[in-house]
Amino acid sequence: MPITAGAVSEITTAEGNKQVLVAEVSAGAGRRAIYLLPPPEGAMPTGEQGWEALQDLPVPLIKVGPDGTVQTFNRMAAKLIGVSLRQDIQLSHLMEGLGRSISDWLDDTLAGRLVQKSEFLRLTRTDREVFVQVTLNRITEDGQPALIAVLQDATELKSLEAQFVQSQKMQAIGQLAGGVAHDFNNLLTAISGHCDLLLLRHDQGDPDYSDLVQINQNANRAAALVGQLLAFSRKQTLRPETLDMRDTLADLTHLLNRLVGEKVTLTLSHDPVLAPIRADKRQLEQVLMNLVVNARDAMPAGGEIRIVTEVCELDKPLERDRVSVPAGQYVTVQVSDDGSGIAPDKLQKVFEPFFTTKRTGEGTGLGLSTAYGIVKQTGGFIFVDSVPGQGTSFTLYFPVLEAQPAPTPRAAVSQPEKGPAERADGVILLVEDEAPVRAFASRALRLRGYTVLEAESAEAALKTLEDESLDIDVFVTDVVMPGMDGPSWVRQALKDRPGVRVVFVSGYAEDNFGEAQARIPNSVFLPKPFSLTDLTDTVHNQLH
Image (cartoon, rainbow, N blue to C red; front, side, top):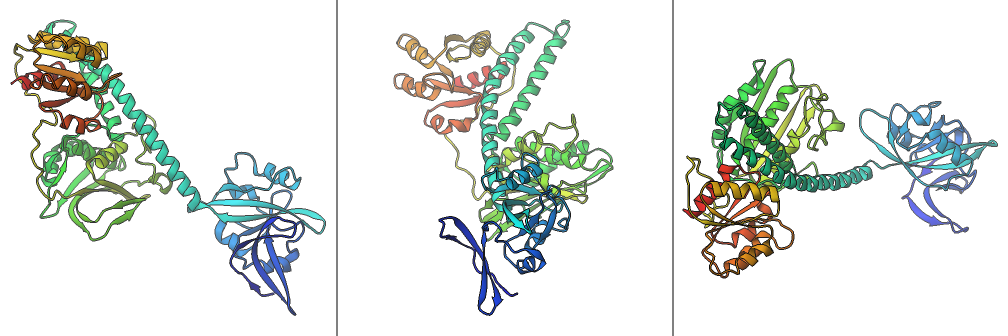
């Protein structure tokens, strides 16, 4: 019985029902049968001859008995489901993810209790992940009820849906991380700041000195953790500079060798001529250390970690992992190991925060998400390749620096000069809405000899400046405050006091208001959390 399978198209029956034309079967002598999905009750072919007619249909079909066992199927179904599909196997052994038992779903369909609709299920095949859209149709064969399952490959659709949900989740986590980091930076500034004030009144022979040092060290550890959250959310303050990857790795080699231990060998290979890139050296070192530590942990019995740097020329955009790398010249850094590798179903999750393949207590799951955030904020790209049992390779792409950047007229980030504490003269207007931070900052500045005027909001600061007899040398102001923000009130105040210098402080990254600060002359940025010395030296540098 030859079959002519035409294009699938939708038609409307005489009864007004929507049905899909699947194929026409020529039965000889000018007779033909038109198969529609969903079929009218009892219209599907019965018996071995009938199912033989449907073997070459371009739609996967499975006949299921009332007890859920597979009775027969066509070639398209066998190709889609794989070797696990055979007669007498339960449908529930082939698919999962309905949210309830598949047997209940079959019973409700047989009893007519369900409005016919499609369900998305995941096949249980182990070689690759496949999703199918399944529609059940009730038929009667030899007086006995049965079900025809019409399948459609929905893997691409579910993959796009998962990507969209993942994108929304990552964006939400990033916003949450940035907000939490801002609030936590205010707390850390107050904790570490008041600890610095106490350390000024205690010497090393004091019994409380060691406790204060512990508080200070743990506050710094907490600040590093907040930095990881900011790196993931790409809201940290970077200090970019021109770098040669060969020199950067040479400076880092001694530390990396200590990290990998004696059982692991670290080898480096460089392109003879490496072009310069622009990145934050400290953050880039953090990325490389995270990748090397992960490679070491993947080889508990020892092995070799290879770091290879090359100059790569892309003649056309590189499309990979839903990312497009523009054409151009790049410096690539590849970190490879011969470890246990990463399973395919986990490979796309490695950059998610708090996702880890290590055992409980052995990893935070922030290392790779931090690396991802740093690389993306630098303007680069990071990709991962892995074969279970053979190893993993991370490849980083950094755009080549075409020309040296023009010098900026302002100091983008304050670089306090470390030196002995000295008393100074000057009048500071301190504007900070967080009372603990304001209390610490004002005490720190007064200890260095400055006269400090405090304001808890931008509006209060402008009210203070209405007194024309006040001679203010420096504005120290938070950026994000209720009501008017820092740059806004400073611009207004500078109209009458154009010579006053400005120190902006914030728990957010400088990039969040970089353009606004760029339009304000003689201004610098001091990120939270800052120490007593950071604050006083930054103010001192602004005055001199």
